[in-house]
Image (cartoon, rainbow, N blue to C red; front, side, top):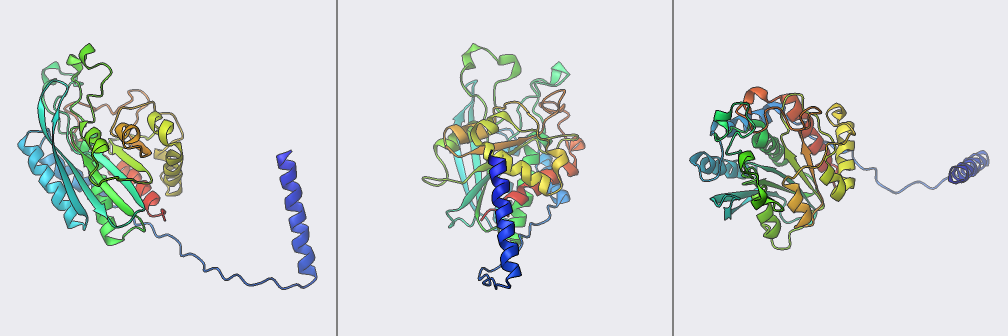
Length: 332
């Protein structure tokens, strides 16, 4: 019935237009100014690859390590170099095993005066143990985390560089969360941690104590493991539960920017990641763009000694980066 009614209305409208056209009536000229098309910058995958490699060169970025401290200083300086207003949350966090972590959330804000804001985030720490490595001898060895951590940060650093060269119309906050990957070791998983989130410690803290009082954003986009070879990005379940409209927006942007092959309209399961406390605690709708592999779920290098630059694909970095640029530069 609705389709039939719609067709009837359209037919009457067309007849009306033809009638008035035949009578030679003049239509008033529109006074609306045509909007200039949005120019979206071109994402530089080589640049993102470089920023990823720079992090890996510091070594494993495990909280309390020298590599972690030096890399954190470098990340702050890079955001400042790109014109962001930078804040750092230095905070002491307790890991599931009682370890006290000297953690640091790093925030770079573009157009901090604007009330129209979008949050982009990734974790910058790396896993303290290769507890999924095929070799048992490596299960207590820190990983380099080229994909798991560094790739998302690398993409966001390139986006920060683009924001300096061509500011977006809205405010953008880039947050590098710490202590995401200090969750329960595979060998220690027992009832003592059941029911608690031992992962995502930095984002849990920020969600409770944001860098700006009463902070709010329209939405957030989390990037995690966005550089692995053969990665695809399926719709993640927690994202669909809390922010389906944002998933729809981002996947549409991927297809509009020519990157649809990396973003199929398919279910990717539910992941505990930094977007969870952003949704649950900060109440900001936030989605997770995270690499998915049909046979293994996570990348085959996940939490192994093989998470190195050898397994990072610039084409995947480009697909994710260009998609995010497509989203933020079309926000008004």
